[in-house]
Image 1: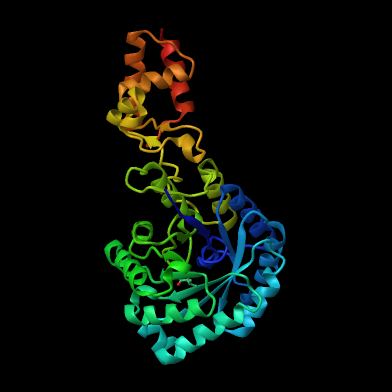
Image 2: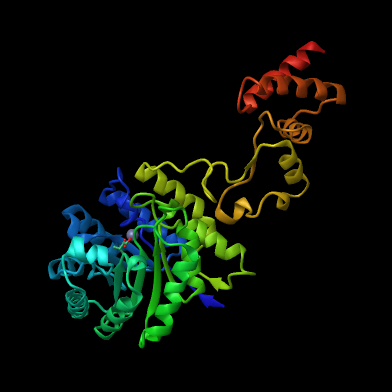
Length: 385
Ligand code: KIV
Ligand code: ZN
């Protein structure tokens, strides 16, 4: 089975979420949890962006020893030198250097010709290799770049010493079919591509980041980049927990392995959410509060008979204690009587009917009926007898 390396950028692209600002201690705490989660590469920050980020990356590189720690740099000698200072004490340091390759970015942002961009990319990768044993080069806005231009520049940066080539969908514009096709084209047309790792990096502007990442894997990517809870610039990055679970439970379709320890997923998600202040939406796949909750009577009845009727993921797989049958207006008698038993009550058939009627009456006024509400109903019923 082919192996896929997980590159986590929660502490760099994730921290680029508007409104998020982690201090050094918070970064280190998340880094330690990411190490427990079993990621392969950790992008700890962008050292040239601020003194605080430089220190944060340096601390992480010093303390995290089971994961390759990297930092981002623009194609500038000063960024690369700063990144080396921050990362040099790491156990397996690598640089992530990027340069835009799309006509839009080259014309309006870089104000450089395609030839100048190729020269700069090549020069900066060669310069990085003077210190860094490993260099990842990213073609920013790859998904809006000309494919033959990508082929040309990738051949040059590989020859200059890059060992990972990342093709980001920087603006979340691509679709699975199109992104997959780009990886296939690069695989088939770049002469020295088999000597390097191909990496995918997707944003979620159209809600397709995870699907696009999977399409890249199917077409030759052996490294995928993303963040916990999918946080990141604008609509965020590919959510690693979703990707990991999809690859795990759909082995029939996706015969790939990762080093992730899935039972650490929920704990990691909670920590990232608490420290970044980015709340996880209730209905978020895998880690949302509703991901293992069932409200309708039909679903609750099914789950009580056999959880696989409405659960494709067991809560335990991702470190969630149990599923949750929410007591609300759609709940049926089966789930209600089960809940009553869980609360320690044995009711006669008549009393159960009475309690169920009182419960249903309450659900018209209250969205979610709590255990306390049920205790009140049960106490009233028993007082009547
Ligand atoms: O989305 C992007 O293009 C990036 C690059 C810096 C790799 O985050
Ligand atoms: Zn990005």
